[in-house]
Amino acid sequence: MKVLNPQQIRQVDADTIQHKPISSINLMEQAAEACSQWLIGHFPRHPDLIFNIVCGCGNNGGDGLAIARQLRLQGFSVRVFLLAAERYAPDCQTNLRRLQQLDVPMTLLQHRDDLNRLQDCDGIVIDALFGSGLNHTLQGLAVELINTVNQLKLLTVSIDLPSGLSCEQENNITADTVIRADYTLCLEIPKLPLLLPENQEYSGEMVLLPIGLLPDAVARQSSELFYTDLHDIQQIYRPRRRFSHKGSFGHALIIAGSYGKIGAAVLAVQGCLRAGAGLVSVESPKCGYPILQSAVPEAMAIINHGETVLSGCSSHYRTYRAVGIGSGIGQDPLTKYYLLQLLHQMDKPMVLDADALNLLSQDPAAQQLIPPHSILTPHPKEWQRWIGEWQHDHHKLQLSRTFAQQQKLYVVLKGAYTAIFCPDGSIHFNSSGNPGMASGGSGDVLTGVLTALLAQGYSPKQSAILGVYLHGYAGDLAAQALSQEGMIAGDLIRYLPLALRELSRTHSVSHKKG
Image 1 (tube, helix red, strand yellow):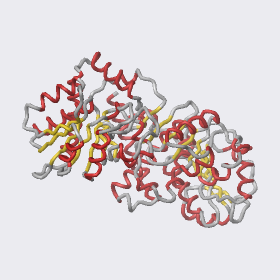
Image 2 (cartoon, rainbow, N blue to C red; image 1 turned 120 degrees about the vertical axis):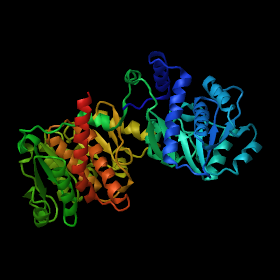
Image 3 (cartoon, rainbow, N blue to C red; image 1 turned 90 degrees about the vertical axis):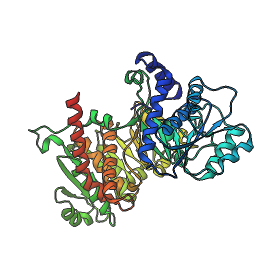
Image 4 (cartoon, rainbow, N blue to C red; image 1 turned 120 degrees about the horizontal axis):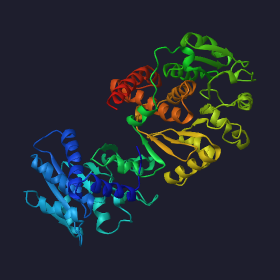
């Protein structure tokens, strides 16, 4: 799914209106209907429930006025607060006239004193002030209105984008100029600000709602930004053939563990096994042998020369279809020597995580040894050691994209909406996963999953996109069954087979429909 800028979105709207065909006011009606149905389904009808809809003068305000009318016709209590303007967008004006035919209380916000009418609000606030079309810095009454809404501390739902956030300007916001939403109902096309960590306090939970845009109109827009959803994954995932055997799915090697951190090796190996590698071997220091043999009997153990840390290096690594290294290996100088010797031997893409990244972070010469198209899986702090501190999230995207292109590496920057930076310049934000995965060992499981997919013959790009989605999908299934707070990394492993089963089922259904 493409992430588009405001100009592209306007073009998609125009193409939809021209070629579907549909009038602009009816397209707005469809968007409002999608929002209204979500609101009705999400907030149970109650005598005390009131929707307080705050509207601007543009198309976002038009959406809000249409939502107000639709909710009122469904029997809900609605109040509208309309920001005064010299002129209103044509569709906004049309929806204002339609709403005025109903018994909906409306307050025109012209002066600062008018904002006092908001003080007695109760219920739910719907923010339909500016949306994604904002292209200037707010000031005056608009800023005071946003501040007033935030001070109400009511549950707030923004339409398309929290008012005050901009798709076009970088890092230009302050705390009192952006609505703090609990939910953002994003109209069909994901908006980049909603995918960036620095905006999480404003955007709340993003909900994508289809509004009937023409697929061909979206397809005609070029973009290097993507939001990976189930449809995208179905184009990558390959179901198993009946006459396959273990050799069909590759031999993966996980290099992991040190004294006190053999658990990380166990998690990575189990993740690799559960993600479908045909054969899995694991190399760890001697201290890990009895643990690995009992915890993961399905894997073949290779005992390294080191007693408590990896050391030395043999010459058997090229025989594996995929190699993943880093989970729990520590940062001993002997281990760094081992890692450098390994990199000298490797001639195919591999997965590097955790301490493998830490050992290489301050050694640019060693970084050049990483095989092209390998997958790096840092969390933000680890990544800062590689590319330096960034000024804001847009800057981080620029630095990371440049690194991936110049070094010909894939960077999986972990977090909410994990971002995958590719050598071709594209950035893929992941849609699966939840905060319950913020637990020690989750990254080790991901290392195993990515290594397994490489071993099965998926390309590095496919492995990164599919692996991150699958890892997050398992986390979502685990959270549904166990709660986010109660999840541990091992639960991701237990739910990986269920995630794959669901992926296989939806793949079969979608291909039959196709």
